[in-house]
Length: 368
Ligand SMILES: Cc1ncc(COP(=O)(O)OP(=O)(O)O)c(N)n1
Ligand SMILES: Cc1nc(C(=O)O)sc1CCOP(=O)(O)O
Ligand SMILES: [Mg+2]
Image 1: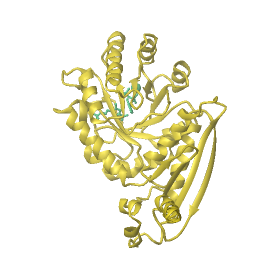
Image 2 (image 1 turned 60 degrees about the vertical axis):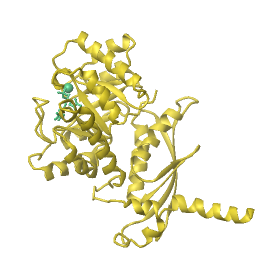
Image 3 (image 1 turned 90 degrees about the horizontal axis):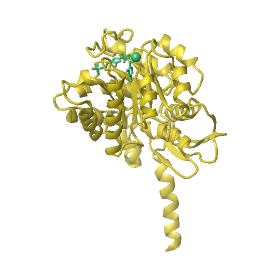
Image 4 (image 1 turned 45 degrees about the vertical axis):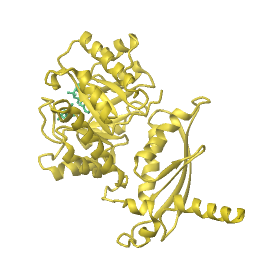
C-alpha cells in the first residue's frame, strides 16, 4: 500500500451534513464523480456509530474499485481509527487539528504507512510544522477561506475578510509549507482558479457536496473545474508569481515559436529525473510512485520510463516540481537519493516530443 494520498479533490462528510441522507450515499456519488480523498467527520456520533460508518465507507470505496487511488481518513478520533482497523476495516489514517491528539502520537500508533493530516491556518503555524520531524505528517489542511456554518470554531485564514488578501495569505502559506496544502472553508467552484494559482494542492468541502441537492453533479463540477484549472497552470514558482503555460506550447511547437510575449523570461528546461529511497528493501516502486505522482500532478508534460521520468517546462517550475517530488519521499521518513539531468535551451519548446521524433525520423529514413 502506497503512503501517497491525492488531496486534490477532498470530501469531508458526516451525518450532520447530509440533510438526512445516508453518509455512504453521498460518498458513493462523490467517488463516482471523481473525488480523490474522503474524510469522515462526525462530531456528534459515538464511537460505535462511527466505526459502523467507517465500515460502510471503506466498503463503498472498495465496491467502487477506488481502494488504491482514494484514501479514507477520520477526523479527530484516533480511538475510532484504531478500533476500525482492529476490526479489519480499511481506514487509511487520521486528520487532526492543532488542539487534537498530537500528530506524533497518531504516527506512533498508526504506523509508518498511515496518512496523517494536520490543520493550520496561519504562516506561524506552518513555521511550527516545518520544525516537525520528517515523516510525521503527509499534508496540511488550511482554512477557513470563507465563513462556514460547517465548523462552529473555524478561524478565517489571516486577512480572509477580503478575498484577495486571503488568497495572498494562502499563497504565502503554500510557499513556506514543506507539505502539500489543501484549502477549505466555504469553498465553491468559483474559488478553484485562484486556489490553483495560489499553489494549493487541492480543495476540501463539506456543504458544497454533502449539502447539495444533487451531490453527484456538485462533485463533478468541482472535480472537473479543478482538473481544468490545474491542467494549464504550471506549478507556481517559489515567489508564487502567476506563471501560466499555454497548453498549445506544450503540444504544438510550430505554434509555440510564434508566441513571443514571455520570450524574455521563459527558459525551456527538459529534465530527466530519478528519485528513489535508500534502505527500504528490494521493492522500491511504492516509494518511487509518491515522487512520480507529484511530477504528474504538476501539469507539466511528463513521461515516466523504467529508470526515470522526463519532464519539460519553464526552469523555475521544473525545479520547484523536482524539489516537491524529492521532499515527498523525504518527508515520508525515508533516506532519499536523486539523479537530475537538465537541458536548458533558448528558443525551443516541446523537446520532450521533438527529440524523440527527430531520432525516429532518421531511423525511418535509414530503413527505407
Ligand atoms: C482537510 C481538513 N482540513 C482541516 C480540517 C479541520 O480540522 P480541525 O482543525 O481539527 O477541526 P475539526 O474538523 O476537528 O472541527 C479538517 N477536518 N480536514
Ligand atoms: C472541517 C473544516 N475545517 C476548516 C478549517 O478552517 O480548518 S473549515 C471546515 C468546514 C468546511 O466545510 P464547508 O465546505 O461546508 O465550509
Ligand atoms: Mg479536529
